[in-house]
Every structure is written in structure tokens, then in C-alpha cells.
Length: 153
Image (tube, rainbow, N blue to C red; front, top):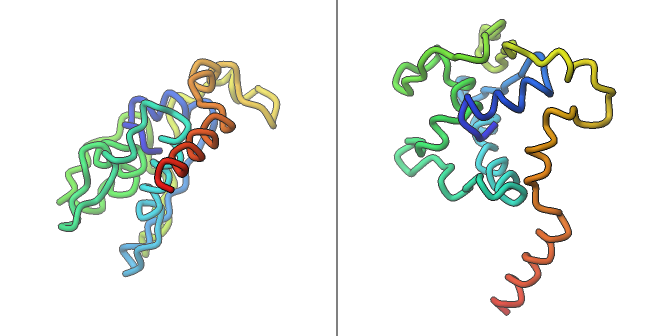
């Protein structure tokens, strides 16, 4: 969700037919998916070295960083709702429903992988193997966290 639309779709098309986005800021609440997305970027960055969480943010003036502006989540969140965010036509997702209060948005994932849909539930489709192989082992992540903590003690 924190990757750009092109890269994100390469993964999402193997995992989902539809995506639901929670957009409460139009109702005056800021605890929606976009508000949580910097946490998603930190989690992704802890596992995948090509995700740089420090480049994924909204500044004090409410302007998103380039990485955030190009992300799947940002685009699905703002698509057709806020012209100031200048989200262009989506290439890999089709809006199928937005509630009248704009709090829930549902998108169809285009070009879903048929072989991945037939893959048994509970494991990842083989098409995701190269991405999963790039993931840091969680034990390695924990080891690095311990070393970093010792450094600051």
C-alpha cells in the first residue's frame, strides 16, 4: 500500500480482488487508513530495504511527501475527492463504491492473477516468491534492534 501504484499492483493483483479504504477525514476524523500509513511504511521498511519510511510522511503544512503522494493508499484515498491533491486517473484499480459520507471506498483490482486466485488459502502464491525472498528475516530485524538499543545505552 505504501508503494507506488505500478509496484503495488504487481503484488496486490496476487492477493485481492477488491480493496476497501477507510477515509474518515471527510467526516472530520483523522484516524483513517491514510493516518495509519506512516506506520505501514515503517513496518514495510523494517522487512524490505527498498521501502524508506523516512520518505513517507505528511509535513506540518499537510503536504504529502513524493513517496506518499505516489502510493497506492494515497491515490485510492483521494481519487476524485480532493482536486487539490491532483490524483490522476487510476491505472490498476476501478472505484466501484464510495459511501455517501465518503468514509468507505471500495476499489476493484484490475487484471487479477487467475493462477494466484486458485492458489490454496493459507500460503502465498508462487508469483510472490521473488518479493518474499527479499524480506529480512524477523530474527535478523530483532537482532539489529537489540544492537541499536545497546548502542544508545
